[in-house]
Length: 316
Image 1 (cartoon, rainbow, N blue to C red):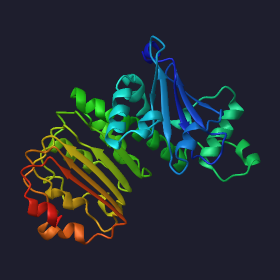
Image 2 (image 1 turned 45 degrees about the vertical axis):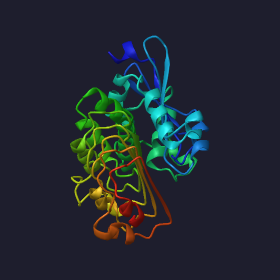
Image 3 (image 1 turned 135 degrees about the horizontal axis):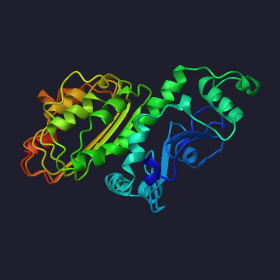
Image 4 (image 1 turned 90 degrees about the vertical axis):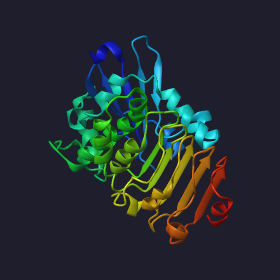
């Protein structure tokens, strides 16, 4: 049972318009909502919808999944920061994450029914006056669905690295990620997931939310050998503004990256390090996929790629 593993988990919600709506708690398998106001996540990045998840396990040891880097992680090199984050979160109780995929905010409980009424109305009607928050709760609302999907995709992202690392089927996680139409940012470190291969990459990209604007993937020491099969009809690509990819290890071909080079891109970082089997570096014939972009910031890093001709490096 969930109660055997979990004392409680807590989610800070920092962009719901009312400070009354700031936390979601699951205790003993029941969803509860709280009016406690927290600011620590909001201070870290107030422009984004951020969710932090904390849990204690059966021996009362605390575990935290953060929406982005936290503490010393944010002061490390980006690759190391996300790697530290992934390792920190590996011990998070999986039963809690699985429970999060099916959260339904409308069924939440509160210590007082009047608090539940105000909190749920704050979600449904974020611009309503305070007195209006005491009115009857709608049985269903689009904003409830938005919150539910945001929570589910957050738990899914937190679980993906562990799923790939342990060989579990990620289908439910990918489905939850894809359904979160409001998500604009995905940051995922798969560093060291040797079984994450070309097919997994293709499947992951095909399940990105269609409104995604910022994608960061760390693929160091994975089984990805090529980007050639990611497809040229990715639903999110036309909206993408920021793309950061880091590859180290077994990559042999990167030509398929052209599928992600849409004119919407403004920030592009490609890091290729210690790739002894990488045969060449080009983004289409004459690098036309790169030349058509209207970038505001470009970072290209190539080191330890001995098979790549010097002429290709200069051309890029």
